[in-house]
Image (tube, rainbow, N blue to C red; front, side, top):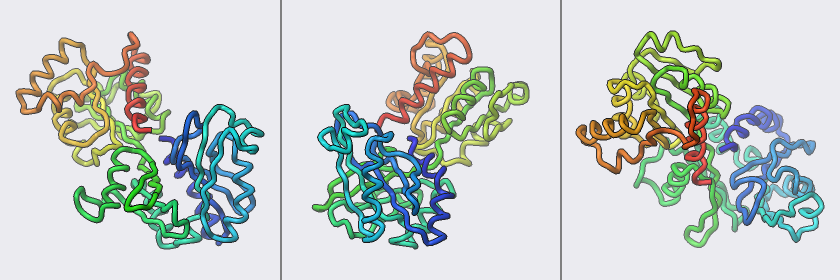
Length: 344
């Protein structure tokens, strides 16, 4: 998901506008049909002087949106705009691929609800996932804001549970509830990748994961590996400890991904026991088919079910006939990205 990265990237500038009392607008892709340039949930921010941060269509309809901002800033009322191949603006700038997009254009949150803006800003600044719910029919109705870490399943009102489910699916979306249409904007924390085992392939995986904006934690209790592996791109954390000493300190949720690659059952199995009892989005295990069968038997004997074990991508990675450490890392990272994007 590129959206949260952009939101964090622009937060300083947006906060400057808000603190100065300047008017700005937010444009959000809330619906798409056919071949659309940007996914649902993509944001663009229009500043007081027409400055644009981000893009909702790659340049196709930004000009038309910019012309609408004066009215939105003057009235402080949000509006929904729809563009497709039949629209003059869309044709004139290139939205001719058969796609249609629906854009929610609204005044900056700081201008309509300062308390909610403060909570939203704090959640993003603290790298805490959150969900912003916006009514799309009654365009004057207030937003609602949820921090999923503070929500428990089967507790609270139904809308909070809907927000929690959307967060767990990693998917911004439109929904109908009690006769009203809402847009749920999901703003997740920075994605986490846990790498168990430090070696050449692990170093290459760390490099790729950092390139794709993951926060990476590596753990290996074997000093020879932890101390001597050369990382061209350093992980965010490197622990010379067992998984049981590291993983319990982290929130292993739907925004967490893990790869075990120590080739030592004492280390890998310990990590898998913890990961399989968590909600992590992805578990990969580096191994041959033969060693994978042996590991499966050990997990069954430890009390895990066949369904539990099916969560493990093993042998890990997409089947690209990888032979080198770089190719192995590429196959793993591609599989992680595929899982990350499965709900988009």
